[in-house]
Structures are given as C-alpha cells and as structure tokens.
Length: 372
Image 1 (cartoon, rainbow, N blue to C red):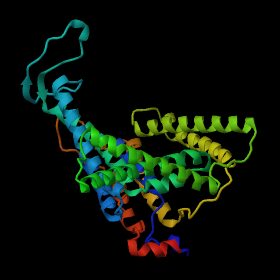
Image 2 (image 1 turned 135 degrees about the vertical axis):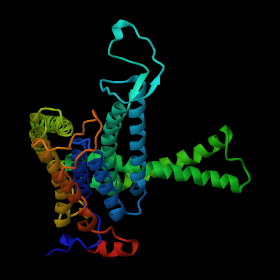
Image 3 (image 1 turned 180 degrees about the horizontal axis):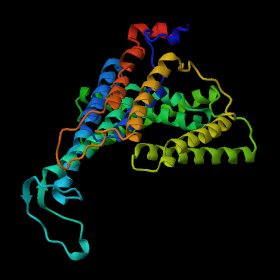
Image 4 (image 1 turned 45 degrees about the vertical axis):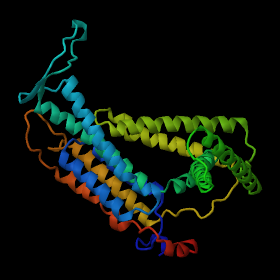
C-alpha cells in the first residue's frame, strides 16, 4: 500500500475532496427544513473542522460563517414579522401597527398581526440557508486555497497564477505599510494623518514595484507563460466546451440545491456540464507545456472523504424521493417534527472524515512530507 493511502499519515488532504464533502452536506441541507437534521449537519461540519483544521489563517473562518448564518436567520425573521408573507397562523404573538397601502399593492402587508406559525416558518427557512453557509464555511476552513489553485487544470493556468500572485501581494503590501509606520514612530515622527500617509505611501509603492519586477523576472526565467501553438479551430472548440460546460454546471447545481426544481435541471445537467467542461479544460491544457511541482495525491482518504459527503447528499435525496416524513416540516399547526432515520444516518456518515481524513502535518512533520 502506498503511503498516501494510509489515513494515519499526516499530510494535507486534497482540497477538492474537502469541497466535494462540503457540497454534499450543503446539498443535504438544502433538501430539508427539519431543525434537528439541520442542527445535526452543522454539528457534523463543525466537528470535522475542529478535528482536521490546520493553524493557517483561513482555518478560523468557520466561526465567521456561523455568525453570518445567525444574521441571516435574524433578518429572515424580522422581515417576516414586519412585512408578512403568505404564511398565516392562528397563534398571534403580537400586533404591530399596520400601515395602510393602496389597492394596487394587494398581497403586501407592513405590520399587523405576527403569528408564531409565520415566525417558525421564517426561522426554519433561515436555518436552512444558515446550514448551507456553514457547510461552505467548513470547506473554506479545511481546504487550502493555494493548493486548490495549484490543482486547477492547465487551461486555467494563467488565471491561477494571477490569483496566487494577488493573494500573496496584498498581505505583503499591508506588512510593508506597517513596517514603514513603525519606522516613523521609532524616529519620533507622526504615523497618522495625510502627511504621514504620503510619506508612507512612497516607500510602500516603491517596494511593491521592485517586488513585482523581481517576481516577473523569476517567473520569466522559469518559463511561465510559454505555450504551444494551437489552431484557431481548436481554440474555438475549447472555448465553447468550457463556457457551455460551466453554464451547465451552474444550472445543474442550482437544480440540485433547489428541491422544487425539475429533475432534469439537477444531476443530469450537472454531469453533462462537468463532462463538457472537463473535455474543454483537457483540450485547453494541452497547449500548456509545464510540469507540476509536488502535486497533491488523490488516494484512498480523498475517495473516502468525498464519498461520505456524496452518501450524505444521496440519503437526503432518497428520503425526499420516497416521501419520508419529517424532511420538510409543516408549521401550521406547530408540532414536534419526526426524525427521518435514513437522512439522520446519512448526516452521521458525513462525520467519518474526522477519523478517515489524514491529520494535518505539524511544523515538525513537514520535513517528512517534503521527502515523501
């Protein structure tokens, strides 16, 4: 067995596996309004993040997505209370002052009675969106964006290089500004105000220009930007396949996440879009003659992590297709929702990456990963 197939070997998991796992959880969350299932999905994502996140700056982004989800729930509930909606109910909690509206605005209400059923429906809708955000936040916290960009196909090579350079350039610019301000403070000069800003901007921009020229020279010496000659027909075919495939992927993902959409807009269009985009990227990548330095392996742990997310999504889709009780909660009348067993087991399957994914390498273990 190759060393990369061992889940116990500390190494960085392929970022594509984390995104597939997270998209599986997001697909499952979009299929239900059951608060127990949604809370279970958020807890599963948070547990995996806590178990397999690194010490990188982006690893702390999961809490920000949770806070953003709470804001979404609050906004959804406030809008429901103030503007009302089609959801009605009999349990009136409070009566807000109602603003009279003209006849041509029938169907819109500002103020009036606020019912517990309407607030519960709004809270469940907001919780579903918050759970999807939490799943995306888990992928952001676990997947290394630089490694993800390094894994892009050769056809997107120039775009990936530009994004990596931009991501590296901005933090260096901030560090240069902080260094220049510290130098002014040590010399007893003010570091705030327009005069100080003008004095700091010159050395910062000068350093950025010198760094950009040095980077361009280093990239040119290593052969960046050199491509093979291809025919015009091949370039047109590649563009059509890539753009058409990406459009199919967007529409397919929308159909997959929207439970009310027609089935033809879901998985079939997504598969067709992936196939077309993959073919276009393969053809476009042939004009780039380069090798990849230390590519991330796709081994057994990657298959297991991606498979657990897909299994979670499949369990929810199967429960929806078979009409399992409790997947979509009715708020009129208010009642305790049942728990679909298949969907709950599928959500628990998504917890497996907490043990099946390789632990992130510690600073002392990075040397071993380099020579792996």
